[in-house]
Length: 109
Length: 116
Image 1 (cartoon, rainbow over the protein chains, first blue to last red):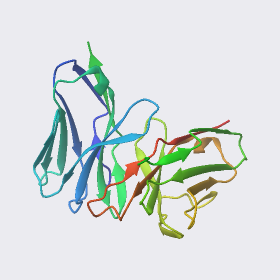
Image 2: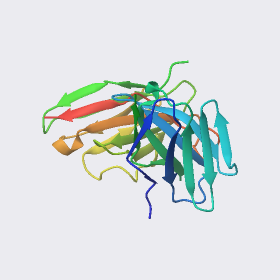
Image 3: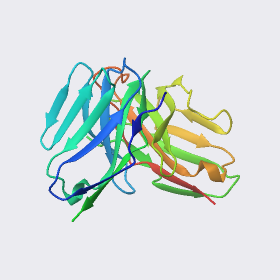
Image 4: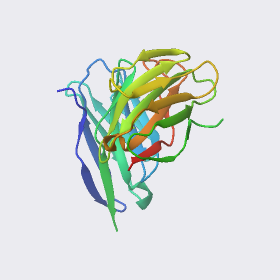
């Protein structure tokens, strides 16, 4: 298909790790992105990974890329209440960013 | 260095009126992109502009919608004769070069359009 797919909801207990998964469509995408959107706010670029990398780590964030399966994941270690948001997976295609529908991360106390 | 600026942040229009949404890219950025986010949806690409040129408008509805990015001033997304289905958040993004390079797109806070 032509869509970037991701699950719509994820609930995680505070302090646990969150793993948000995504499948994308274009094997020629040079960059893959994770954006965060808090309620009523714009999009914040969290991290991105170049297509020739398998993994990228940035503090509490770890991005894993499986090009063969076109699978991208975002792991948030030690999840905090401030991580509650919608997380969008996205790929670049012909200068356009193609977004998934977003995963709403809910933090349980 | 100020980020991407959009105004107004909230816009209410009645059916049949015109909506004008403005976007000022980050300093030094000459590429502007407009996206629309319908309720409970992801963002969908609408149009990509450089100064005085429309590069790709494949995501723009064929009627009532237009966009420009003049030599001076902000980029404008214009919606004529708005209908209820136009109610959405409209996001602008900018980059210094085409986004196939290492320069990604940085997003503004969005304009939330409500059509009554």
